[in-house]
Amino acid sequence: MIKKYLYDLILKRYQRKKIYMIGLSHVLSMRNNYSKIRLLKDVDYKIFSQNGEDGILDYLISSLKLDSPKFLEIGVGDFTECNTRFIFERCAPKGTIIDCMNNLEENVKKNLDLWKGDLKIINEKIDTDNFMI
Image 1 (tube, rainbow, N blue to C red):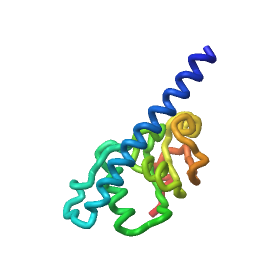
Image 2: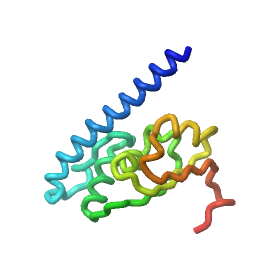
Image 3: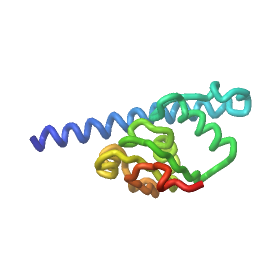
Image 4: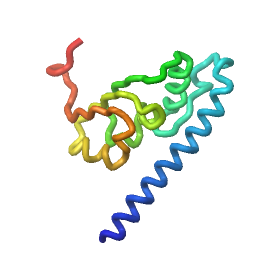
């Protein structure tokens, strides 16, 4: 049982790192063409996002010359597939994620090295009673 747990843990960590490194390599090669970009769809690239937001956000952060971006994302699930995961992995920024998922912090910790940045995890449902404009 412990042997299988350790194997799964190491395999998942290796797979996450491999996905990140392949994605980072692609994004870094795309950066050479950022000055020629006319449409955001030309830089969309999926690493951890659902629809190519990783590439778009990297383009915006790079174009705006943000060394330490900050973020807030609502509805992240366990942080395996979301818009800000690549930013967190690459830049180690300060960010906040919010979701009403059961055991949110425990599930996020399984998928992420929290020591890389300053991530605040809020386990709460957003509705009209607790959201103010």
